[in-house]
Image (cartoon, rainbow over all chains, first blue to last red; front, side, top):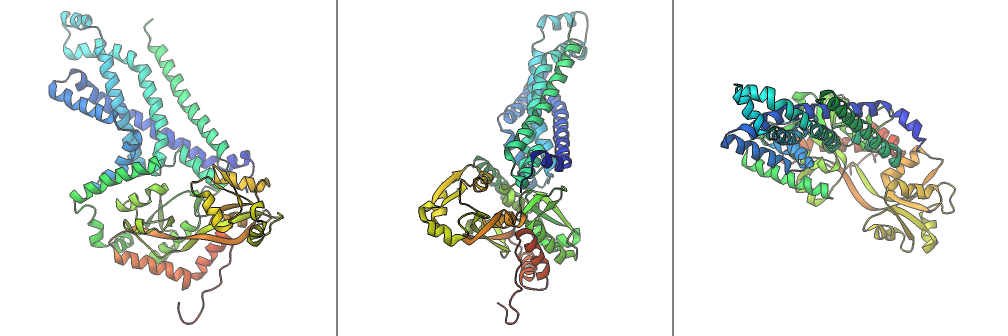
Length: 218
Length: 281
């Protein structure tokens, strides 16, 4: 029944590559959308008046207080009852984006607020507008500071993408379950899954370190 | 288990919203699922992808199995073309939520009929009777169920670890020694290595393993703990339920018997005798 691991691996190469592709696709989009939404939420969180700050704060705290799995199930099942029938793929990307956006918003606030007050005052003194101060003084410093945590969120989001297998997105985890269902080689293929995730996440981390070095102030 | 509770919690919220936002989830019922499916030209079926011989990815990467064939039979009844099916992959836990939230027209995923489940979804007539069987290595000193029974406490039976595992085995072999394993493939491996004389396993999986490796395994010939496998639909659409029931009934006892028989032979290695000709029943 079960032939050798290498034979099974060769036979499964196409669905495995598909699964890896899906994992990267879902994670990449989730990180991109999450970052965009995170910036949109993070700015009012830092500079907004009372109402905007309250809304942004409510959003980040609410999302960060919900497990990713529950977010995924909610986007897939609850939204369809409300008439928005997302496919498993759309629901997976949307929920992971929302998950990472809350983290991005929070770290952007931290980065912006960490810029020394004296610098902002100095910017005002030389006649920079609020927007110019933000663009030339606060943002470049904040971005450098949040880069390591942002990379961390990207890795967390990628690892979180395993959970979309639960709603039927055929990514690495679900592909492994399919392969193991056929040949019972559970140890081997779960170990392989671990290795693949490690390679993906390690690459993201290395990439982050590379960028960090590139933009560091020497 | 935790996962299942989450599903239930999310589903509870979903149905709560459904009752307040009436009209949305009943839109389909008004026009009828049968007509909706015919207009769409493709049947949307929820099923799994990791459980041979029911629904699994074969070496060529295609979704195949008995559940897939049953879905094809329904599609053939609808469109005269068994390939007009779109499969939505779902975990076993998602079978009922996906029906209730209108993600799929029907679920065919080795679903055991329980009265409790029948309060939430509408079951079709069963298309298979699952049970627990005993798989033996070919050439072992015990040839069949009678031998194992006679061996008394000398017989060692491997089974997947479970709270009721001992009771399961002892219901068929009251004196047998029970060896519990954390995964069902390890229970089969215990039979392979001679550590156990037989493994207690789902009858369908035994049939599949024997059909795959007829020179390696034998079916003991005894099965117990029956349970029915049916497709399931959303409640409240009798026309759609009747239609699917008719298709399944005619596959097992009528004009489509040959297709059902071919599938049964392919996945369970068993050639079904034709239904008794004459007075129906």
